Each structure stands twice: as structure tokens, then as C-alpha cells.
Length: 111
Length: 114
Image (cartoon, rainbow over all chains, first blue to last red; front, side, top):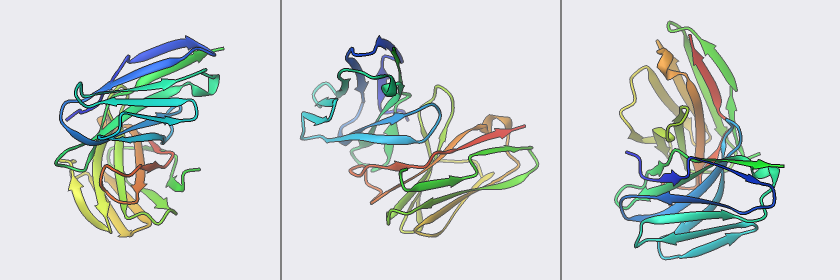
């Protein structure tokens, strides 16, 4: 079953602008993770945020989690061409430790 | 590099062939995973191994057969596949199989079934 659903499905912005992607989920979770995938290669972990956390930062990345709305957002500030990739959120169901993945947001940074 | 390697990177096979995908992790992790990624679909978990024991099998057809001989190696044996099995197959590992640990992915095997 699909847990995380990213929004938008695709996003195209100019280099230097900020990019925001959203993830919604259905059941209660312990953790939510964001990953990046470049052009059909393996996924790379970006940030893990726990259910008792509201915000986490890593370099130009900022992740927020709103458990009351069952949603998370990933903000990339001052985007670069190298940020062009697909971004996925993954959640663990409360009673099952398996990660459930969304279909991803495809981000294109135009030079 | 993530510490997880996969071979081969590309594979073309006929429906009557038998082939195997190999994954190796150099991270000392206890859990290993096989995922299937098809275009415009969420990542599908196929198999999970924890300490070499299979703990999850998400109703995967029997033409896919996993093998985990030790905590560092994972195989996916393929036989009599169908064209709809064409996809990117990703291997991953994590310190533990709970969702509180990040997963490290290999580069994937692009499989085409003809």
C-alpha cells in the first residue's frame, strides 16, 4: 500500500530559487525520511525526522513534519543545477517497520 | 559511493533465461533489501533480510527467488520472467530493519525482459 504521496509530481524552477516539495501520509508513523535519486540510479538518503520532531536542517535542506496534518515538506534553498533529481519520502507504518514509499517529485533546475 | 555495490548494472534476458543479480554491502549492516522500481510508480519492497533471515516477502511471484548466504551478500535469482518484470532493481542495506535507520542503496540493475 502506498503511504507517502509527494506533491507536486514535477517541479521546474530557475537556478537560485527555492524548491518546496510536500509529502502526505495516511497512518501514524515513527519516522519519515527523504531521499534523492539522480537519473535512474540508486537513492541517496537526505534527512530522517522522527515523529516527535518538527523541523530539521541539513545544509541547504530544511524538512518540517506536521503529524496533526500527516504531512512533511522538503525545502531546498538557493537551488543548483546539481539538485536536479527525483525526491522521495518514505514512512514507517506504526505497527510495521517496513518503509513505505511515495512515487516521488521530479525536480528540474534550469540554468 | 554508498558502500553498496550491485552487479550487473544492466541485464537483458529472454523469458526462458535464468540469471542472478548480486548485491554486496561493506557497511556491517544487519538488514538488506530488494526493491523494484518501475516508471512513475512508488518503490516496491520485494524482500527483507535481517541477520540473514528473511523477514518480509511482499507477495512476490515465485519467479523471483532471493538468497542471503551471509550478512554482506544478497542475491536475486530470476527465472522465466515476464516483460512486465522489466524495471530497475535496487538493493539496499541498513543498520537495522526498523524504519528509524537510513537505508543505503546500490546503483541498481536495469533489467529488460524480452
